[in-house]
Amino acid sequence: MDATKHPVGWTAGFFLLLGTLLPGMPDATIAQNPSPRRVTPKATGRPASQPARQQAGAPKRLPRSRLQSPDLRVQKLDPKLKSALLKWELATSRIKTLKGEIYRYHREFVFNTEKRARGMFYYESPDKGRLDIYAAQIPKGTISSVKQPARRDPRTGKVTPARKVPLAVSGDNPEKWICDGTQVLEVNDVDRTVTSHKIPSDYQGRRIMDGPLPFLFGMPPDKAVRRYQMSLLGESKDEVWIRAFPRWKQDAVNYREATVILDTATYLPKHVRLTAPDNTQTIYSFFRMTVNSKLEALAQVFGSSPFRPNLSRYRVVASQSEPVVPSVIGLPWKKAQSVLTAAGYKVKFTAGVPAAKRDLTYVIYQQAPRQKAPLAPGSQIQLTFFGKPVAGGSKKR
Image (cartoon, rainbow, N blue to C red; front, side, top):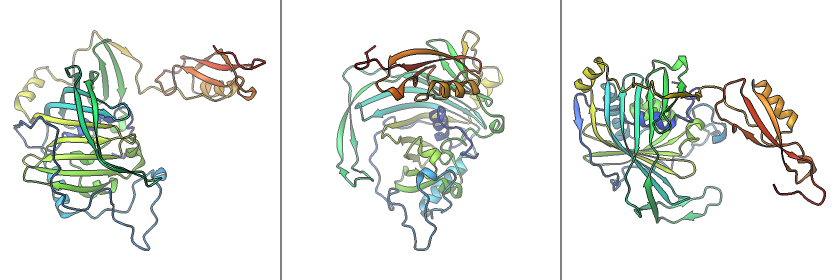
C-alpha cells in the first residue's frame, strides 16, 4: 500500500497495534512473560541514531519537511538484521487468525504520568481486526520509576543527561475498535454510540497490516529499508531487538522511533515501544497469543465472529470519513464565510469580545464545531468574531 495515499492520523494506534502482532507459528498458543521491563542485550552494531555518513559525490538528502516520497538511498542491512527480517516475513505468511491479550502503557513526561490498560485483540487475514481496551485497576498512589536516556538537542547541541523520572500511574480510558474489511467501527460502550470510519474502496480487501508500520509484520527487507533507517540493537538466545527511524514525513508525524522485541522461538513481538515527536511513549506488551486456532475458526462459522458484534442498541453518530470542518480562525468574517460556504456549510455569526487592536475587528477567534471535526455538508457552523474596539481599552467579557 502506498503510504502517501493512506490516511494514518486517527487510526494510527489501531492499525499499529494490529500490525505489530503478525509474525508467528501456526496452531500454537504462546504464553509470554508479562513484564515489559527488559535489559537491552549486548549491542551488535552501530546504533540507529548514527546513520551511515553520506559519501562524497552522493546526491544531497532532502530535508525532512520535503520528504513526500521515500528517500531513494537504500540502507545496507546488517546480515543478522536481514536474517531476522526474513524470518519475520516468513512467519507472517503463515498466519490466518490471531488472538491474544495486551497490556498498554502510555507515558507523558511533560505531566509525569503513566496510564495503563489491559485488553484483547483479534485478527483474521487479510483485513479484519478488533481491539478491546479496558482500564486497568491501579492502586492509588502507585508510582512508576522510568529511566530516560541522555538526549542531545539538535538545534542547540545541549545534552540532557540520563535520569530517572517518577511517573504517577492511573488507569487509561476504555476503547473498542472493530474493522470488518469495509469500515472501522469506534464503539463507545459508556454512551452506547458507534462511529463508522469508511475504508476507501481502493484499500478494501488488502492486508490490514499494510498500514502505518508495515515492517513490523513481515515487510520484505528491501521494502523496509526504503521506508525506515533500521538497526539491530542486540540479540540473545531468546530475543531480537530492532529499532527503526521513519524516513517518510507521513510516518514521522506519528512517531520518531520504534523499538520492537521479537521472540526468537516464534518471531512474534513481545513488546513494541513507540516514541512520539513530543517524546511521549506508548508501549504494547503481548501475552497468550493463539495463532490459527481451529476452535476460533469453528466459532466464526457458527455465528460468533468478533468482527460482527450485535450493535442494534447502539446509536450511530457522525462518521470520521465525512468531510471535516476547515479552520477559519484568524480570518476576516467575509473570508471565513466564503471558505465555509464553499465547503457546503451554513454559517451563523456571533459578536464576541472587543478587539484589542483595530485591525482585528470582525476577525474570527472561535468556531463551533471546532476545526477538523467531522461534520456533514449542510450543517451549521457558529463563528465568534472580535467586536469593535472600545475607547480606552477593551472590556473583558
